Image (cartoon, rainbow, N blue to C red; front, side):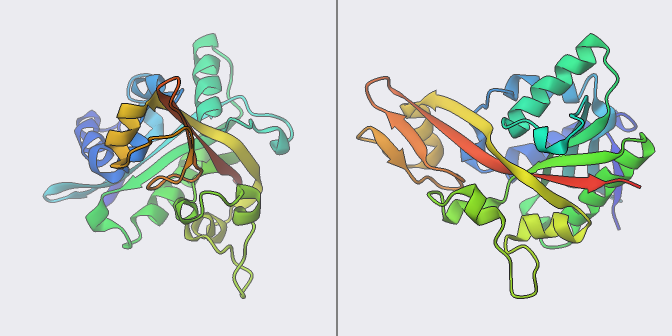
Amino acid sequence: MHSITSVADRPELLVAVQQIFDVAWSPTLMIPSVSSHLIPRLFTDLSTFVLVAVTDNPIEPLGYAAAIPFVGPDDLHDLPDGGYDEVFTLAVQDFDAGRTPTMLAGLAIAVMPKHRGRGVSEALAKALCNLTHSHRFPHLVVPVRPAHKAAEPFTSMEEYAYRTRQDGAPADPWIRLHWRLGASIVRVCPSSMTMHGTIAVWEKATGMSFPKTGLYAIPDGLAPLWVDCERGDAVLIEPNVWMDYVIA
């Protein structure tokens, strides 16, 4: 059995979040994005919206989910092109300015590798829906990162996201999980995460070498990495898919 609770209610679980964070994400995703400096705000001002799944006896971290309230657009098709990075930035600006949020944005769900495939992700997604309902927000919007897209980094997200199986369900398993729980695709956010780093940093993260300027497919990257040898740096701009849960 496991329980899901917020870091606000059980601050000692912040250690569990760090343990999950350290092992659940690919090295590629550990390259800082343009919003990475905001992550500590989740655990101070916004810890109500960080949920942790643990076994209680003994305590073992299973996974976590993070969300953030923000002032959303009247028309969901106006959700930001910048997806994760932009909504994270806007939400912190809204908080600091004292603006009243109108919806919740999911930022991440991460599960310890040994507990994947056991329903933890689904439980955390449902918990985010319940959290949205408890705060009386009408929408939970999520810039979904379909990890299987990494097998096709040169395929456009517009083409990939809308693929379906013969039964009509989304082809991608992560999009399908949200769809099965009631979410619908709003649109693609073309620049959801922008990650900059030196070529040396990217080579260490990917285990690859980048001898020439150009585009490279990299492990776990949803899009190709642009390498500029003259500048000595590289950038990965990943698209995600905005999905919306209408909360009753």
